[in-house]
Image (cartoon, rainbow, N blue to C red; front, side, top):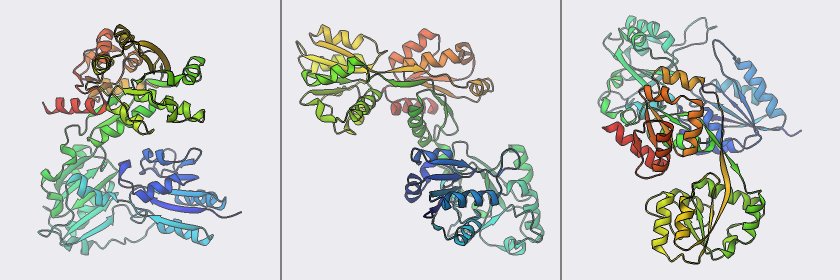
Length: 505
């Protein structure tokens, strides 16, 4: 059998969008992905359907893999002729035991490629504003392990050299040995007042920074409760100006924001929140079910060019419609010369992705405004209008169009069904005051959420509720929920904008 190939890929410091382009390409080509504890699981979104995913954490307790077991797994997959990605946190060649894994591959004639990643020790400069080099105070940087191999008889760390270094020292995996590290440096001549910074969860919305002097860094860590994974920076760099820390100064930084859409929708929404510095907590409440296999849709599709206007009222409707076209070996040519209306910019953008430019998009993204503005835009009397939308959508749009003289056909292409998921964790987080915002992007999400979570619990907790638009807000009020903000622009971006503005007050 032909031997496989192994990519040793650096997953970067934490955030999934900080992986390199080459790293993402390797993941897309993988038959098998072997990833460790520090590699963000969100990177598995690049994995092809059917790729085997193997998690190989190294822990002091619970399920754990030794380096030898990881080597064996990697070798077995490669010898079976598969393309393997060994996904490692940070950069594979910086305290990543890369040499051990390469030795195994070379010994068995397995081809490989090393794909570098951004190491957490480098990322602290960008995401915590701690400049590792500066012409004023540091012209050299040294990276040191804070946790040597337990079977090592003699240290490889040159403590006298480190103590005299006129620059920046970056320790990896150093929190557990902070007292020992500080003691060794001071015993070898480093000033006890030397600045130290500990940065945990680098690049994540949970990032935390603790600063101290070399003499009291251990006690300061105990007081603040900072925990690994963390980077320890020692030297003048650790005293960097806090104004450089742009990431932790974002309005949504550290805010725990619950997203309640369907699973794909939550992924999209969570990505937007992360880009604003927030910490999304996914709680899927609905799942989108296509209804395009129904006879009503198939008969409508066969006569679709007989309509003057086709209206899409959501991105979900667009996605489901074009999935159906693809399954039937059809494409956008089915529309012929029929005009297309979209409820808003995001729905129009979704159409654009399939090669369709919407003929009409209202200025305010609600069904009512879509109807009002389309009536003002064109004479609909006697015109045939096809609505392709959710089964549970209100009749308001259809009634408005009919009053204007349109002949309306309302066809459901999908519906939103309630999804039950484990809620114990969310109840606990709410009770402990760890949730800042609940977000709702549709009435169906609101209904499904409060089937599982008590309305009284939410109202009595110090949690803010954000709604994407007036229809969703009205549904929340009917359910007995106090709505703190309703987005002015009825999109996910508009919803996040509204939350940001509220946080600035």
